[in-house]
Length: 303
Ligand code: TA6
Image (cartoon, rainbow, N blue to C red; front, side):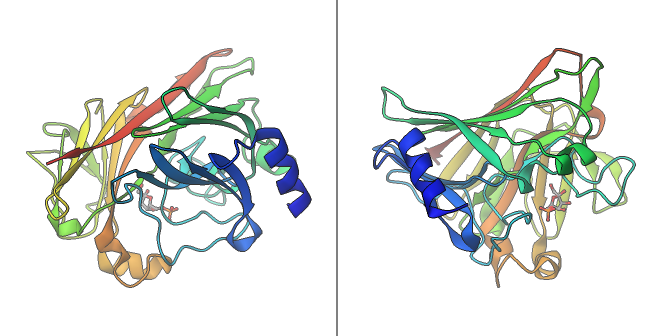
């Protein structure tokens, strides 16, 4: 994308200092939002929200200081969009884990300054021969953000094909924490989960989740709010969602993080993923002509 393209985007969708397009690292176009309630940044590749900080709060979404910015490569941190499958592809191991949505270009379809001070941004995945090779179905997908004291994200899939389709998805959100050892996650008690670090065994959650090792779990049939309590920063991040039956809880811990190469020296201690998803048993069968909305809303409360 050229500087001329950036200028055209600012003419068409810019909202003055509240929403502007800039050329970011790796020559990737970035959308910068700054309103009286919050600030945020979104990469146009993958409609990938990278940062969100309500005014008077520390950043809520974590972005790795060692993230790599390159076309076709997912950015470590923020809210990667996993779609139209979660995890490895069901039948073709050559296809990218977590689908292709997060590594292809999206376009802006609308921007709006909302009366209460938030900023609305709507984007749509740009389909291509490359995307159709991975997913030969017509399923336009949009992402709608509302950036303010709360952050809401809506992932909307429309099945315009003539057959029902199975869709797996996740808003794979990295939350910023003081130290992962100070974190307690409530809201998943008594849920069944698939323990991906214990041969995929199915277990039942008892009480709050704490972290002392690599943790990678898919909680099934989990629809209640999740509360991410950070004792170090004395804050609670509330995860409220609709249209998502799975919750994925992930921290790579030291060895896995080091092997990934884009977490930075102690990055794993500064983040926890609580992902609102439809995965495993909870994937969505979307009928022909149907629409599915996966919605999350994040806000910060005092502990
Ligand atoms: O959501 C947890 C997970 O599936 C982990 O197994 C790990 O692979 C993580 O996603 C990150 O995946 P990525 O492809 O972004 O490196």
